[in-house]
Length: 153
Image 1 (cartoon, rainbow, N blue to C red):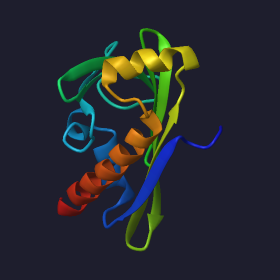
Image 2: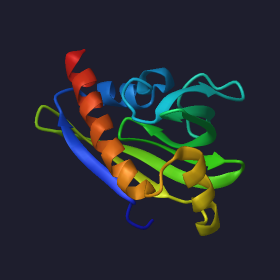
Image 3: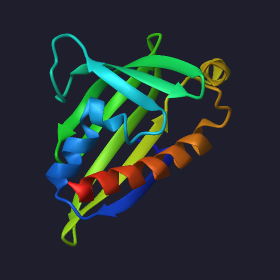
Image 4: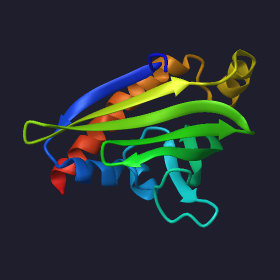
């Protein structure tokens, strides 16, 4: 796989299992992520599992949009999913969790999978022209919130 279009990492003073529980919780991630505002498991799924799908709700200012995602990895070391919008590939999001120094290192990465012709359309819908730069800022803010949540509880 090519390099991610945005990524960052943070050391968290919590167990990998605790961090995994946070990043794989659709409702809980809404309070940590920048644009994600919640999600619903689809097709009878009740939690993270490879192949499970969910509808994600997103917001940025007054703009709102939804996507459909499919979980590709669901173990304590990695939670990842691929995102589609109107049936088109949009992104891959991945959370890698590695044990380290009394806690773990959490790395959040994303890959922009949008076809070139679809990028201007999504920019209008989301209000984001430079998605890589916006995702980098969002990831850094999200990791800070996840670290605080994991270490608090």
